[in-house]
Image (cartoon, rainbow over all chains, first blue to last red):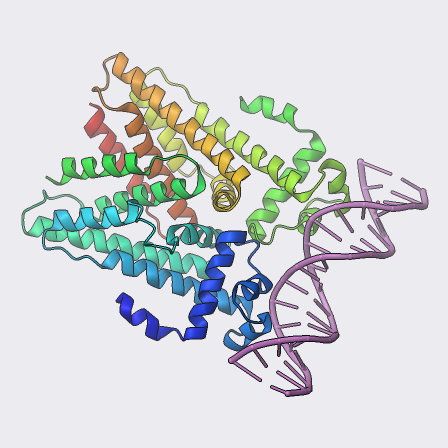
Length: 198
Length: 198
DNA sequence: GTCTATAGGTTGATAGAC
DNA sequence: GTCTATCAACCTATAGAC
């Protein structure tokens, strides 16, 4: 779904509540995410939230969808003609910290939400979909590269899985430690791809 | 710290409480981890927990240490003479699901705890230490391999960071999705190392 | 849509008997 | 060490006035 269509999917009050949820989550973590606190971030009364969502779980399901929609928009955008450039473009988009322009610290939120998938089946299904999606995007690009004879004939889905694991791990560590390894991993990953794809 | 010494560090009641915490965490997730529930898993009254730990936070800090101690024991064990074999051994230990023998589903617990590092500085510091530790283990092995002229002269710390990111991402995805990619990534990672190290 | 008030439950933590 | 009883604070959710 293109980014511009995202605004039609959610009403203005819904978007405000989602943004309030986002701010609350970043400040208090998932364990401290309460309707009361979301109501405080939202300018209006907390009981108003129940006009827009039936329950806390209902709100959380919507929020997960809200966040994933925005995340997927960042990986599908930026199509390039050249498969090698296209691949590099997506990797950079995921591993290069955008400047302050991107106020949405979406990776932080995704890491927080994703850990709930360990004990929640509905969350687990959503993130299964997310990872399937990314692997298929990578896989398609690699196969196109092989078809136009830019890349050598590798196992595209295995390479795609490997790329995703490395990216996921780099982001995961970046958001949960004080280590600054993300640029090292990005450089090393691109070098690896240069080695095996050409 | 060797595994055998771990039992001296914690009293019997403490270990029971830690195990009760572990079971509660796996069943209810971090957000549902309450003293009441830990008390139910622990055979005895919940107020007894406050005889062993000053507060919930105190208990959580101890639990994090308890889990990390056990995790570190799994990466330091199994020293081999040959650097290449040693590296492969540790990677397999992390990415090969041990049979039911290993009742401790330590990776699940670590993923759950680690996500708290997004909003908790003390958790973040602990996981910074964990990742530093693993990278230094990998880095040392690679450097020894270069010294004995088994490996080619690579940037050992960059390669170590890359390996850790890939492993972390593979485990992370494995615990938060229904995808079964971990063996694919393991195979691909070992092939990659074979390519660049020899 | 927006609010206050409130119900009914759970939380972390303490007091005090044994 | 172990327990019951209890606290105030907070939670999700609802009722009902405007």
